[in-house]
Amino acid sequence: MGLAWLPYADREEAEAHLGPIPDGVDLDFFSEDDFGDAEIRWPATLAEVEFLVLPYLSGARALSRAAEMPRLRVVQSLMAGYEHLLPLIPEGVTLCTGAGIHDTATAELAVGLALANLRSIDVYARNSADPALRWHRTFSRSLADRRALILGYGRIGHAIRRRLEGFETAGITLVARRERTGDLATGEPYVHPFDHLPALLPSTDVLFVIAPLTDRTEDLLDAEALALLPDGALIVNVARGRVVNTDALLAECASGRLRAALDVTEPEPLPVDHPLWTTPGVTITPHVGGWSDAFRPRADALIGAQLRRWAAGEPLRNAL
Image (cartoon, rainbow, N blue to C red; front, side):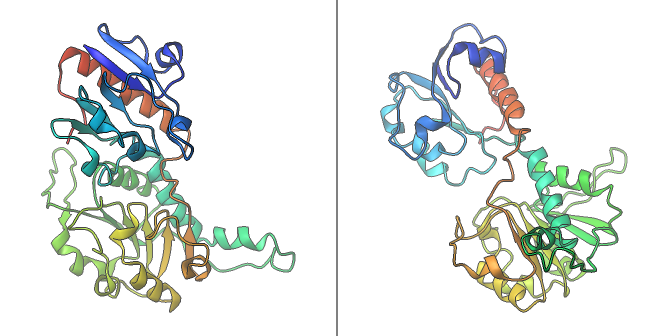
C-alpha cells in the first residue's frame, strides 16, 4: 500500500497501541520531541511517505517540508481544529482532522471551568497561599438553575450537553451554523442557527463557546453581542480565542458586568502582563482542553482505524 509515518518509537510500540498493522503498510517513526522546539529530526524517508500522522502539537512544523514529500496522499491531524493547517496542505493531499479525539476531555474541562468560576474554586485556590485569606468564604453561584447555551453544537458541544444534563440547569439552548429541526422520535434536539443568537443571548446565564474558527465565527461575540448578555453571565470559551473579541470581553469583565472562564485566548499564549490575568471574575487555563489521559487511547483508536481504511481503500474518517 505505502509508507506511513507514525508517532511511536518503533513497530513494537505502534502495534501495542494500534493492534496488528495492515498488510502492505510500511512504517517509519518519530516522537513528539522530534518536531518540538529544537531542530527537527526528520525520518530518512521524506520522499517516500504517503500517510503522515502529524505530531499532536507541532503539526505545522511537520508540514514545513511537505513540498519534498512527492508521494504524500493523506495527512492525519490529532487536533480537532484545522484552520492553521489548511494553507500547508499540498494540492491533491487529503487532510483528516482529529474530530472525536478530544470530545471527552474538552467537555470535562468546559464544565469544570464553569464550576470553578461560578463556585469560586479558583479564588479559594489562590487564597490558600495567603494565611489571612485561607478561610475567607464567598457566597457563590451554582450551575443549577442557570440557563445554558452551547454555541457550536457539534461533537464536543454534544459531549458538553450530556454532562450538563445532570446539573439541574434551567435549560440548555443549542446553536450551530445551520438550523436543525430535531426529531422527537429519535430524540434529536432542535438546534438554532447563528442568526438566532441575538435573540437568545439576553436569556443566557452561562455561554459555552465551542464553535470552530472560520470567517463566519471570528469575532462572532463582539462588543455588540456581549452587550446582549444579562448582567452576571459567564462566558466559557474552549473553542478559539478569536471567536470572542478580546477587547470587548476585557471591558465587560473589568466592569464586573460579565465573567469569563477561558481555555483559549487571543493572543495565545496570553502575555504575562495582559490585564485578563488579573481581572476579577476571570478564570484562565493554558489551552489544555484536550490534554488529559483520555487523549491517547482515542488518538490510537483513530490512527488504527484510519490505517485499516487506507489499506483497504475505504473512505477515511474526518476527511475535509
